[in-house]
Length: 384
Image (cartoon, rainbow, N blue to C red; front, side, top):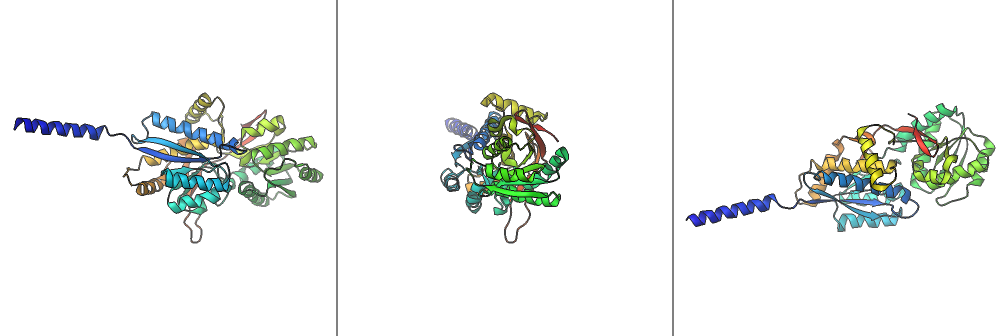
């Protein structure tokens, strides 16, 4: 009898040991970013921000003891590739959620796949109107141009005494066209006359014809919605034509690439954004120091937003009790996200429900204040 009892006890101890030392679960999160091609200037910092944040979370024990695993794919800023990447991440890799893609063009193509599959898709760089209109599984911590540009224009007018402007924008890209749409409303609302409106196509390198027309109208500033490379070349060519008026840019200007190409010619360009490198908050100082140490370069807005996005999802995951049922756990994550509030590198962050659309349940936008910057000496300096 004694041997039986001892044997039973040994069995219970062994079973307990196995139960308490069982390996933690892995929580796979997809990252769809443009890592090659001209848009890599945004996608690479985004990947870096996610990687840094996930390493920090895992170094502190993960989320409820579970390790975060990033599955990173290059969507190349192409709609077709973004669709393929989303399908792979959702159905093959079976991720809990997807961050990305980098450009709004790709988001409009790929996000509906995630929404239909009931997988959270979290944008960190999509700022145009309509992103979160695609469904209740679509979230973003990238501040909408509709929130940023009114403040940007108002501060530019105050700084330079602007009375009239010319407008130049890319008309074949959802992001740059969306930025123009917002600029147009802002200029009308603030009663700022537009001397002329010119367009260009993605990949154009010669903007002299448009700029010559603009110069003839003698505007006080040029309002421009463009990605960084085109923006930099537009600025350089404007200066070469003798145009000295300041530029007012959208979110596409927020890249080191602008200064790599335009250098001092970019001085007096005004933009808006959610992140200030010189913010003295402890959270931002720690982020900047860690990023610079790891990558040997200073972070940008896109790295900061990706970094914060990982922490937002990690915070939501704390409320998720993993069931082993992926469909159920994805739903739990989606339900936990809207109430998350964090103090991130970009400052205090919360979500707000996107305005209701007839017959369509909407997702969640960023509720966050914008900073205004002016370009001086090869970098953007905080104005407000």
